[in-house]
Image: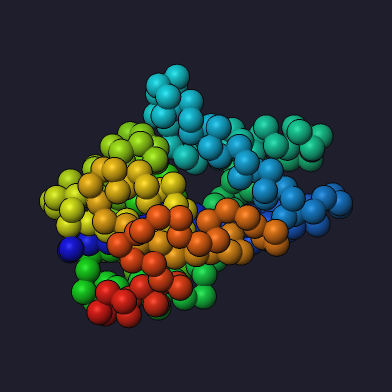
Length: 233
């Protein structure tokens, strides 16, 4: 194994807190009384349906930034908030996804792993989104890979294969790291190794999914720092 590629939203960064923080700021300045965590969950709930149209071939590939913005418009309308957000405000709101805090172990864990392996995101986020997210959180990637270089979205196998190919590696030389069992299942089918780490707070209190590994992955670790130890870093 020569490289590790990572799911980012939920695995490396805390999207729920980051989006809710931006929502709270936006709502406070407009005297809007809506739970920002509820809004964050509603916005995230539009994520998979929007990508599925592309995965299924019903829409050509567009970057996740565009899908996030379309989803924001939809959620604002659902809450009856369209009149509170003009175009510049919506553009600012959409940049919430570039300002997501890393989990406490993420930067140290990635730094340790980088000492032995090439590391890169394999995210559905665009190259620009991953770049600004890395700058915001100090994520020490060697290179940025993922959906945009494949022109498709996970869990389609092309995304994993394109990331391995971009590194000049056979899929068997690459390990996918994720807090989502379905992501790892798809990576394994594409020929990659798989490592699971739980993020039981990703969806907030009452999370019921991905609390533990549901298959015999190559590595199961407590967090990214523990993964580094288990991989000899």
